[in-house]
Image 1 (cartoon, rainbow, N blue to C red):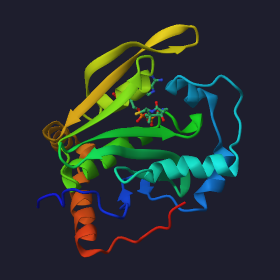
Image 2 (image 1 turned 135 degrees about the vertical axis):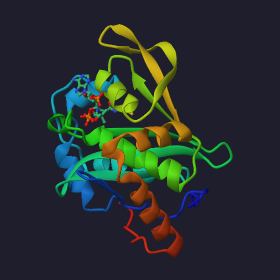
Image 3 (image 1 turned 90 degrees about the vertical axis):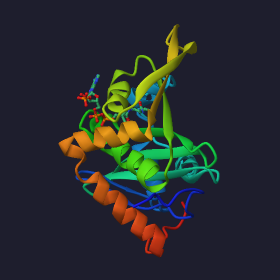
Image 4 (image 1 turned 180 degrees about the horizontal axis):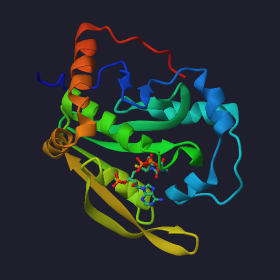
Length: 222
Ligand SMILES: CC(C)(COP(=O)(O)OP(=O)(O)OC[C@H]1O[C@@H](n2cnc3c(N)ncnc32)[C@H](O)[C@@H]1OP(=O)(O)O)[C@@H](O)C(=O)NCCC(=O)NCCS
């Protein structure tokens, strides 16, 4: 079955994995995101912040969710695990001509790190990007000290493509920004080889069918 192709569909499909469900944001998510707030242990991985853990105003939470659907070249999801919102993921700068896009993902609280949720989320989004949208390449940018994110991306087929050397000043040092990229055939090879990726082909079929038949439920924007 061929991908549905681009431009981006006007709905964001639900992506279901064994442990996480990625779904479009709804207005009620803003309260949860505001309560989860900013975790400095996560903020530092983006080279920012050094304060204590704090909540977000409802306006800040709504803005964070709005960035998920952002401009027309962007689609994003909230990540749910066991019915709880635990993170955010986004494909942005989707280019129909060159068929590439940028990927970003974050858990919202430190207790959700290192439990496999980021790797599963990344594989779900890449399945959508390649097998549903028909993208050719996806890139991500990560600070060089963010070992867990680099390991997560490598476990999903990304390789280092280059570095913006000493690009980000943080905590008194310059840090490289690592440009990671994965091609459609590389991800397909990885997905075919890894037993834990066995469900991804079926997911792609379900999502392609839903989008082709218009059976995807429309979630209200946040
Ligand atoms: C990056 C992120 C999404 C990864 O998700 P995660 O659920 O925490 O990571 P996972 O449990 O899936 O583990 C991913 C890899 O990191 C490894 N890992 C886990 N903890 C680690 C640590 N403290 N240091 C180095 N590697 C670590 C795991 O072993 C795994 O590698 P493997 O598959 O080769 O064994 C998550 O850590 C996060 O939200 N970080 C903050 C935001 C961020 O950095 N985003 C990246 C921008 S694209």
